[in-house]
Image (cartoon, rainbow, N blue to C red; front, side):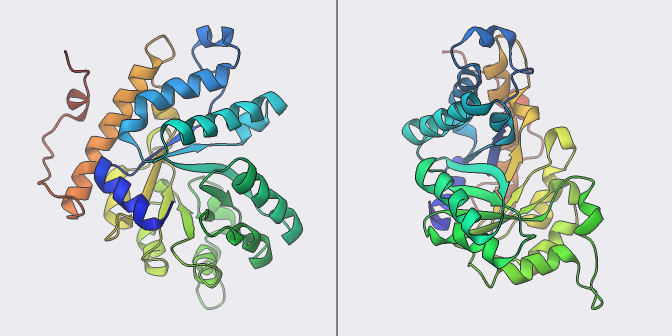
Length: 295
């Protein structure tokens, strides 16, 4: 998927929502455990309920790899289901890979040739030769970790050089020598608030994958204020707040309602920035707008 195609999907759906499929068998509705593949059954229901309100899904590999071969089958079935039934969805493998060149090459082959995802998250710590193998697939994306949403991000990412450049700023600056904004995105956490403005100074045209709203407490309004550019340039991720909105038989409908409410708020910010037509109305009750319609 090209940058322009992703932007067109954002405009058409009036949404820049990415839903994280962090599927934990200890948290899904217990009745699904009787299914042959409980994780895939859960994901399928979540996807069918929420696909109209989002433009991307981000399965986190840790939740699948922790279950061995069976978990990886669930991951692959989820990606295949998205590709077959919702081909306009941008699929990100949240794997946080990055190793010496030949090893990264094997990771890239796994995700882009075998699993056929659109993008993979990559750690920058080992430098150019650990990232370049992922960039050998011109129709696929690298999502490079830059400024993450966890508390420990302060340990290294905010460290300043003698010239006053913070480490995350160096990552943003240096990595732009490796690829353009047509193939590289950056992770920039919603919990960092106004620091998104500093990210935008370094990377004004790149898409940002922004985790941290919902359960982690990041502000969608702040993300839109400091992070949005003329082509939106944002994929804002929410995981637990959507997929675990309910743990009974209503779980898919509860997820739909949460996703719809976020999408409605996003539409206002897109309208404010004149990315889509229409006048923002902040008196709307997003949850009321997302109630099921009677037929």
